[in-house]
Image 1 (cartoon, rainbow, N blue to C red):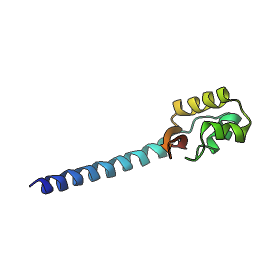
Image 2 (tube, one colour):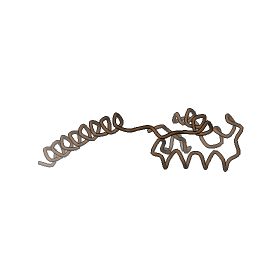
Image 3 (cartoon, rainbow, N blue to C red):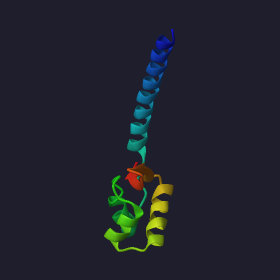
Image 4 (cartoon, helix red, strand yellow):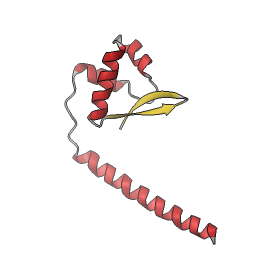
Length: 94
């Protein structure tokens, strides 16, 4: 009985996931990308799921406050998000 319920729940979750994927795809096609400055573009290129703030600082030669501020702007524009990989906070494009 429990196993059957688990299967039904899993089926519903997969259906929801599929529909959300479609909605995200539709949203991306209708999304006008925000205008970015040179510093934002440079830092955005480094948001590949591998670089921490410290690594972005080293690559760009920017100070920590500048990098954090730019990452915050990119996050507010809905372009990136932070995530944890191998116990480190890294940044990825959405």
